[in-house]
Length: 239
Image 1 (cartoon, rainbow, N blue to C red):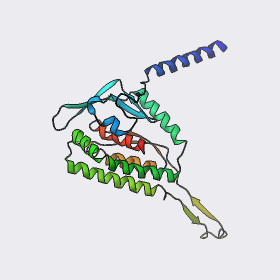
Image 2: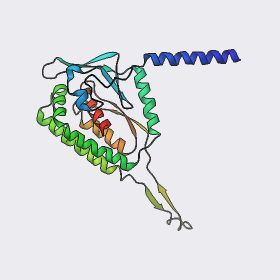
Image 3: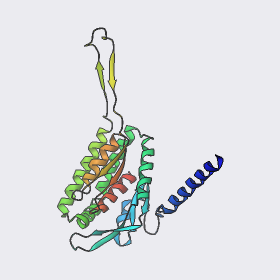
Image 4: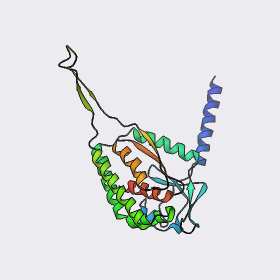
C-alpha cells in the first residue's frame, strides 16, 4: 500500500538525481567565448572547448572526444565532444516541448532572412572552416555559401506562403452551398542528418524549410565535418 508507493517515489527521485548528475553542464559563456555568436565560438580553434551539443540556446560539452582532422595535413585540427545518450534524450524532450509553442509565419520568415545576412557576413570564416574539415577549395566553399544564402532566402519567402485549399462540394447534388477546406500543419519535431561533402548547404536545405513550415529541428551533422554544422547552428541562433 502506502509503503510500496513511497518506495516507488523514492526510487524515481533517486533516478532523477542520477540523471541530473550525469547531465553535462552548459558551457559558461566567458573566457574568450563571446556569447553564442560564431565569431566568438569558432574564431580560434586552439581555444575550442569540447562542445558536443547546442540545446535550447546553450552549448554543452561532451564526456567523450571527437577529433576533427585537417584534410590537408591529416592532423587533428580540434577535438570536439560527442553528445551522450542523456544529452540526446534531453534534446528530444526540449525540442518536442518547443514544437508546442509555435512561432508566427512572419517571425519565421524574418529569422530566416536574418540568417541569410549573417551567413553572408561570415563567409570568410565559413570558407576557412570548410577548407579545414572537408578539403574544399576556396572557390568550392564560396559556391556552397552562395547556395546556402539562396536556400535560406527561398525558405524565408515560402514561410508566408504555406496555405491550404478550398474545395467546393457543388459536384454533388444538394451540396451546392457547401465547401470544405484543408490546412497545413507542422509535423512537430524533425531530425536532420547531413553528409560531410556539403556541410553547409545540406544543413540549411533540411533546417530552413522545416523552420519555415513551423517545425522544430534536431541536427546531426556528419562527424567528419561538424564545425560547419556548429557554425550554422550558431548563426541560426544569432538570427
